[in-house]
Length: 395
Image 1 (cartoon, rainbow, N blue to C red):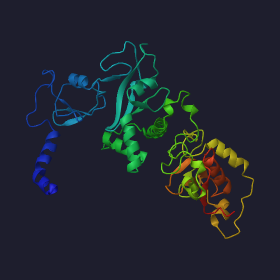
Image 2 (image 1 turned 45 degrees about the vertical axis):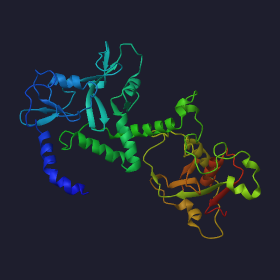
Image 3 (image 1 turned 120 degrees about the horizontal axis):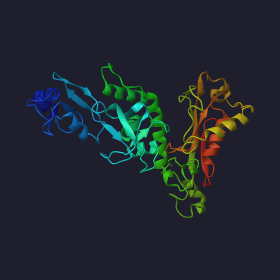
């Protein structure tokens, strides 16, 4: 089996068809394939096939697909056209094709939508007829459009583009900036008519999207008391192999003989990572935390309050050996950074982070930070015996 060698024999056919798709085909129709009367001068790059339609049929065909890419035949070649310039208006709050009796246009009669195929400028109308008393945000979400703001939204991203960005960031380590540049290039690769810059809005939307997916996967959306009633660490994924009381431990495990007690014990490790430095480029007011201790990181305000109260206490110095991690903790270079690293408590056997066990380090690996993280990670545990490993626990 030599697929590449066999494809080379047919490569000319592939190239010929690709070039044909750039034009009107070998035998182009003279009239629209739908109404059979209008000029056949519009084609869609995203619809199946290479049918040519008139303006009216193109708009009608795409009322349920308003983010398709349209090309217009100007007599010599196909040039870019948008469904917005052809007169298509997206109506929210009603079924496709149903007109609202009292439509409310978006701000400045212009709306930007980010999708997998690019960045689109569309004309969008909200429903204000009173048939369904819904906010603009709710109407956008019903259409699977994620608004960038909750007040007077002007930009939204489709659910599928946020899902694509989330998956690519996990599997290919693609940054939001690189992904946005790809969308911008898909929209206009010549940079002659670039789309409006929506990179800051995409950053905000993907941050909110991941937070909502965290709540959804943890089942917080089904809490009768609402999302705010979620408990600290509730959204964290527990280690499935470690003993978890009430989940994977046999009945009567507390009465196990002394020789088998280790089978029902947790092995924990405490350590720090100074490669995870965070620059001091924002503030809590401009970029507040969303999870607030719901998963792995501790609740930030309570953590900072504790560190402030213990900042005057001197750090103990190691006497058994010269260990720079402790002895030089206060002299760590922290200029221009909000965190010099992170400390964490992990499952020593399977490398799972414990709920509420990760926190920022401000001046190296100080005992006050690590003590607080360890306390939060084991607070409320029902385990009787813990084995804890820490490389500087000799003090």
